[in-house]
Length: 208
Image (cartoon, rainbow, N blue to C red; front, top):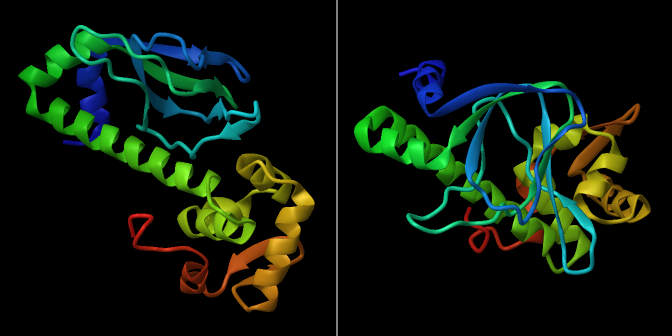
């Protein structure tokens, strides 16, 4: 079944809502009573580390699932804040009603399991990136996992996502260029030797 058809079924558990650009959708540590599916537009999810630094979480595409799924009889807090970067459309889902639908419809259950698994994997990968022991390891992991985004984003935004100074990122990227891993033509980066990035981190440890 197409994702669009699954989304049509899921509307039984919630409502479609439109958000203007730069609108807070939910906040870290608020009780997570709803799940969200991104239908159109772009959102930014972020959390704060122990030192109070903002860390931007992985990228999101259409039909990605956001928010938390409470355990039966228990509440769970959102693990990050989410705001719209552009005008966007979200399907807001009541968690309890969603679980009821999933128990009755295999397509919805499979969709929910798949999207929750993808979300868990993304958060785990990004946790590895942000807690990497060295700058080179952190940058190599980020480029390896998010090559397309890295090549299309300004360096300042990449540095912000990784919570490192832009000049520190530039030094690592210069090293990667000198090693033939990256090229930079007119300010646009291209990955030449992706597998060479694996020399900077334990690929097996990070789930590869």
